[in-house]
Length: 320
Image (cartoon, rainbow, N blue to C red; front, side, top):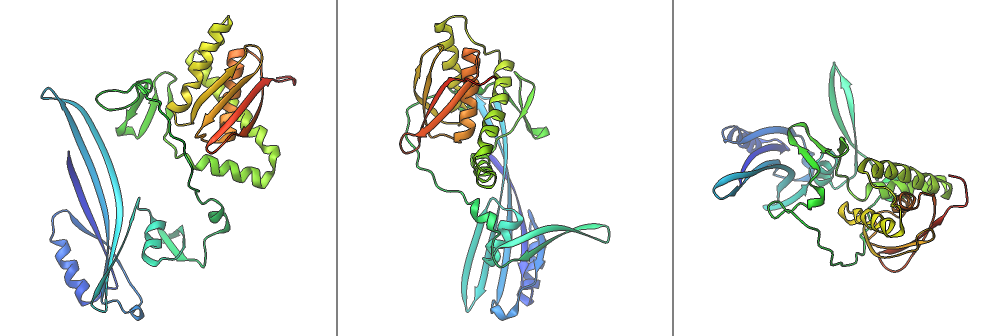
């Protein structure tokens, strides 16, 4: 693997040292002077600089002396160093973006917005006294996770689960395509939907929960139809179809169906460890039940221990 690196330099508090440093940077291969930032001299810093690091990685896997697989990736970060009272101070931040960069520099919250001036767009960043109230409510909380022993069949070369071999990465287009369904897919962090759902329930009340569940149920039913997963004609076939559907949970990071109890035509109980989101899983399980039984489900659930939820699905008495 050969990294191709570009170093973008920014100067803070330009003075005599900074001018000489800028001249030296311009003469270095792979270095570029990206920005110069003015600082308040009252802070007492003799010198300060900020370095934006951008790294692109290209890897080639060989098998029997022949090129077998090409992979590419990129990462960014910001490093800051300050000289004050003959001592150096350092700070850094990974996953660099404009807000995290300025918060790393100033240790203060910022707001940023685009402003059009003289036909050009200018990014303006301003210090604010404190983060918005919503920002505090959307803080990610650490999870208590349960260990498991599931091992998916994986490609011996790339490590990707074989059940995901239908995904096609089109790097040059920036897309992931599900070849079975002809749909675009994305990798989304597991916290954003949970936080959004939590805030919807907080703001609108529990009346919104059935809407969330039904929306996920409808989407999952369409997915199962596209994949050709349908209810079997006998109890054994229904049970096998249900197991196939439940195996999709860990494959996509939704959690682990650690235990199930199923009475065809009646009740389905599923214990889910490390659940991704209680409402979205309820909607997905409702779709699984409907696909297996051919009838709509009523879904109830309760916490059954740390990082575990028990779902109970029974035939709905209301019209579909």
